[in-house]
Length: 344
Image (cartoon, rainbow, N blue to C red):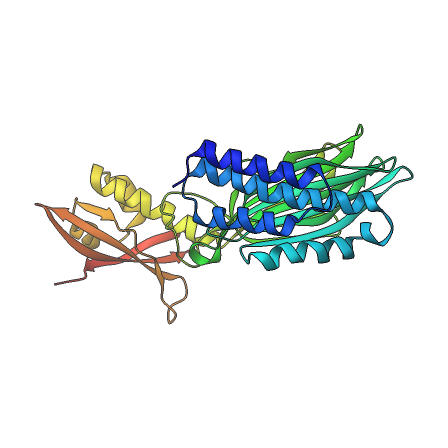
């Protein structure tokens, strides 16, 4: 395994040779760095090598922008960057134009490394008074993409998203940044700094719709039909503004709220709460005090709408006996209607 300082020296040497003179065989240099990146296991070296890979692509983009004419078109630059991707299948490159003004233009680079967990880098290039430069970058976990967003005060804006690898139930960690050109520079602001475990993202006509998981007592990872939240955002007076919010499958949060209260009432011998949640007195008397929640998915009864089975465990004398708790929803809310050990 190479030492971090050795990787840094290699990166500096290659990037220095790539930017010092012309013509430059950047493809060969990119291939060398990509081979090292694929082999390295040290996080510091990996980050340095990744920065080197992106810097080579940056140099290719800015050189073509400097050449002008057809060489500065997004189609030509995209074709040049595809050659980098052909050298190593672990990365994808694309570019697109987002803004043109009287003094220059702006081009975006979207670079995503797909080896292991995806990592995407947003690169913002500008031609100002005929001089191209890399004005801003943002590298995050996940695949990077950009979405149109309404201009503010005549200043162009766009929304960048990073979507991580799919997890349970097809959800992925989502990160969003809104970028705006103002005061001669591009500045980005995080909409969700800690990221969201999202199952849906839509951006259309200045409206951002995000569906994501929310944590609540009784929530279980990887299970279907659990409560999610869906937010719709738009461009408001103070920036991106929440327009409306709704719960998806709110019944599950309500059910687990009742189940959480039940387990606490059983453990604490809270007769009043038990009487509210378990109308049948005989059933209340059969509930063992060692009843605890089990992290298994709840099961809806397809033949009885509004009926759900929740898994539990009776912990007693170092024994763990699985129980099945049947809940039904009525005008009063969720009520326990049956409970018994799974193994008699």
